[in-house]
Amino acid sequence: MRGVKLAVRIGWLCLAANSLAILVFGVVVAVWPPDEGAALYRADGLASAGLGLFGLLIVLVPYRRIERWAWYALWFHPLFWTLHLVGNLPPGEDHIHQVVFIALSLAGLLLPLRAFFPAGPSAAE
Image: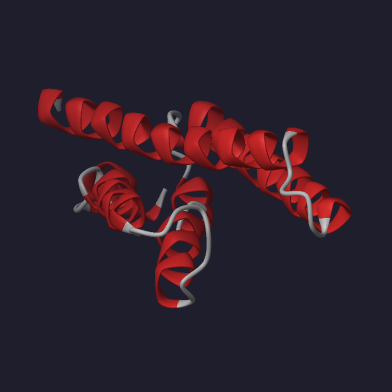
């Protein structure tokens, strides 16, 4: 049981870091957009900030309670970063951070797998 609790703690920390990164990126773009297309960048920044905040709330409340729906919902993290990597999307030009966030999000989802999907008779709960 102790190992499961540690895996959940590591998992929510990894996913919280992902959500926080999305939130901070969104706020930065909304507050300091590039000169050209400022209104579109502000709108995208606000949308990203909202996504990051929403993800952070899911991580901090239902994920930590080990609610299975939260585990499913948080698969948007690796999807988000993979689409950014494949689509050559911002932020940045090196894309190293996207690979790091993909790895962090996968760790956050796969390490506590036994907590969200326990084996045995209680699995139906």
